[in-house]
Image 1: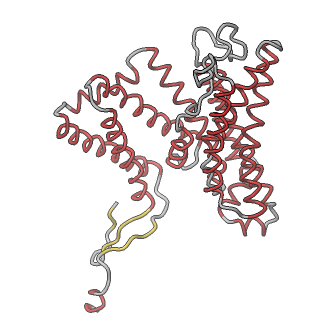
Image 2 (image 1 turned 30 degrees about the vertical axis):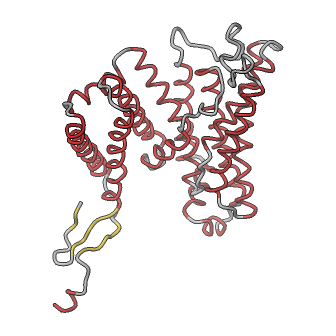
Image 3 (image 1 turned 45 degrees about the horizontal axis):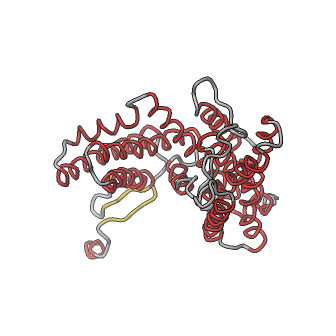
Length: 367
């Protein structure tokens, strides 16, 4: 027996049974606390600054003025919107890495309507056309890789990723085509004098409409995924395509339908960014949110309500990190280091939520 024990590994990793919600969130909170301590130590070693001053500056950068609060809420709503878009596909185990391009295509369709129809149709009709065009364009863009996956079993990760670059080049081409003024290589503010196609503001709050729309999308997506027949079907396909076929589901149809939905929501994000926020289109309009949204969705376990918290955490860190670079005169890379440390611990703690370590002698869990 002793000889057999010697050949056993010191410890092994075992899948953990589902933890109660309070325990899993306690692990996540502990991870954030440890991350702040580690980031504080690194701050002292590299800059000599008091970590508490750095953290208070981060809070001030996010919530210091009403303008900053509204800017934070706008950034939060856009990140949350794109996270909602990728969630149905990811829950179906369709790895849609193309949200960045789908948002750009939706934004490009919006910009095209504003430029080509801005002085030709009434503003109310223009906005209706913008909505239809942005949703349709992004949905069709997302349907392309879904079609090839369903029909020919292509690799959706590479397909959707490569389509991002195609979308970027399309936007770059139209930037040159519609440049204003000529020779500037950018479109500039579209319809700046007439505001044709600009989404309406609610009161004095420029971003309130965006926030309301995304909040409504969050409720819709939660109900769709949890209680609708389509939500159930995409969950079954995600668990096992063979099981889905066995119970009579049309897997190809589910894949294409789900990606149409993902693309449509990305189109809404493009509409809100171009028509409601920036009033122009550039290759950086999506701002990397298509990739960050994957992390937001995954950390929330594809739960749209919890996504509000994960999107807020990331948006807050991005806003606060930029402020400490300004106040302390630090290189922007340093703020990225702090953000990376915190995210590393948050992502890493998921291991201890899903797995446990069992040692050879005692078989006690390390939680």
